[in-house]
Image 1 (cartoon, rainbow, N blue to C red):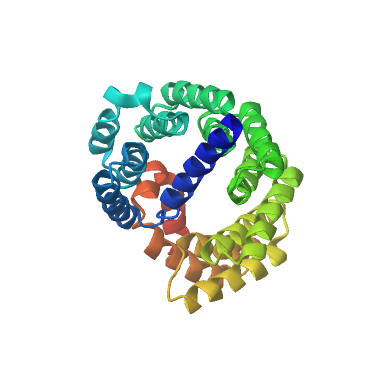
Image 2: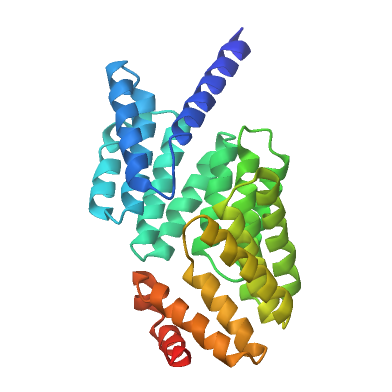
Length: 301
């Protein structure tokens, strides 16, 4: 009897988490926040304090993705008086979102401690979905071999876990591990995992994320001297973006680099020009990689 009650409780909590996460559109955090707030009003009206608390963690995340860090921290602060009485899943999500905000603020070492605490709590309560998330975030804030180890552990857990939606993590994790190997200049392993990410997206028909996965494979092919293969893939990706009525400056940049390497200087100049037109509007790139933009500008002239 006790076992059935506990099982019912776990299934209910899992259902709540799934319902909440289904409200996410990570490309549109403002839209997501509005959905969470509507759900929050319903949860409060129904007296569901646990779901309301969990929704607040995701409202904070949506605010953080919009760059509204002070508001996001205030949203999480509202949970502090009752945090000790809330279910473990909510407490772990609180830890994860606090860590994400700290990392976004540019303090990865401080964020590491929050993610590590989230990991320990998720392990203690057998919350695989959030354990994977914690490993994923530790892989982001750590570096070198530690990043590879965290992502490898997360992949192993996601592949064998029975938790609902655990395998939904695999596309991101394969991608992250691929780039971790890339940073270590292990291009063979980088390609292996980036291709796994591509296959994962192909099997699910993910659309735009699949284009990004294909771009990643082609970028590493270029870096390993496979310019003709890389150019063919990037050109096909360019056409796909055109069909969607969009353009991607990073695709233009890769096409330009491949053309330049193949001696097609005139065509390369055209694509460096297209790259500049798009990426000069990318605030993050302008701030963090001025030398890269300066080179693109020079090659576009």
